[in-house]
Image 1: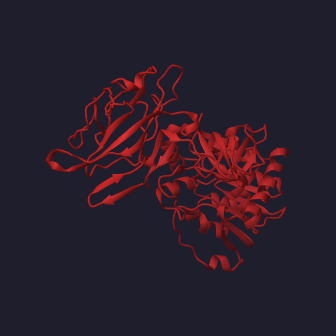
Image 2: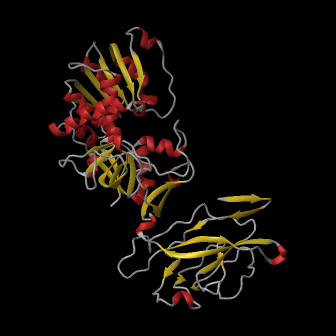
Image 3: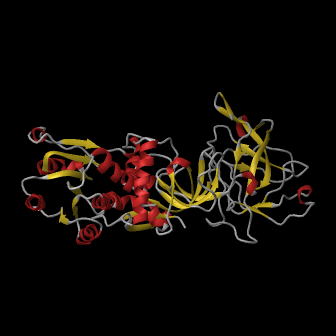
Length: 475
């Protein structure tokens, strides 16, 4: 793409894509390109590092950092088919210029059409003030059409790891194209999971290459399919357990084996609440804890997405279900979704109340959402041979290993994406049966538009109490 020679950079075939808010297509006649004015004009000033010559004169130098204000751009070559762009020596070009919609939305009928500038060929060097060399580029103007594959969408992009402020809303991201064994989903809703915040912060063991779009659990409609995809067609209602391009967007590409049919009885918001929560809860209970009908289970933090999923699954599989929540609303939701008893984990003596409820035998399985706070108490609540299944933890905790010895108890961690494809198929078959029978019914909690994703990430970690699954709405 480019060669670096000493302190200057020479770009060959480099694409510049100017936002339509900057470059506007004007009405064009057949003779327009042979006149002194191209059928495009600037809406606003270009960035200082992207200076363009105006006028029909020969190429000439421009001061470093020169910008171009609003007005009509004229061709820099007699034929009128090129604009001349200047890249000053040591100039820092943007990582990429992408098409943008007019005022952040798709152009309506009669509105300006976005245009693309593509490098035609490198031009000879000319000298700027002080004699330093500058690299001139001839740029060809082309209107964007669907055939170019540059359809645009709104999406969240992360260019560096950090706090919620690194989540950048962009309205000019190219729609991804599905490849072999992939599908393109028009996203209606996307689930927000705590793990999304860990990845964004850079604290998670699995870090995506930057920049990236977060989100794995989407629900929507198949927009297109890649080669060798036979299970889905355009228009199918689906949900996913993972994406390739990221789910915080209007469109997402996913591998076909991570996509499942969404029944008509569930809406898209509920579909976006299935992926990580239900597959994790199922893996925790049936795969890791190996629960049996008649056993008891405590869901420690039951009012969120994974917690409610665990309550529903445990009840459907014949377990005695206890849950905890931090608010009265949360406790009510837990009771309505499979729990036989619920306790307020903000009360000082709630552990004593649980012990009194279960008696000397203790609890067979604990599904733990916040191990760095609760693990020590969990070990004292277990029955002989009991298991703590760690689904979530936000830091370290000190425990006494002797607490595991007397009753020969176990602490087992769960990572959904350690599951094999075959295990995902098994989980999906069981959960889809739950959708058909009716015990799988996701509870939707806070809902945010895509633009408010930073607030969503703040709330999922620091809210006073979960009350259902958090989702982003892309429509």
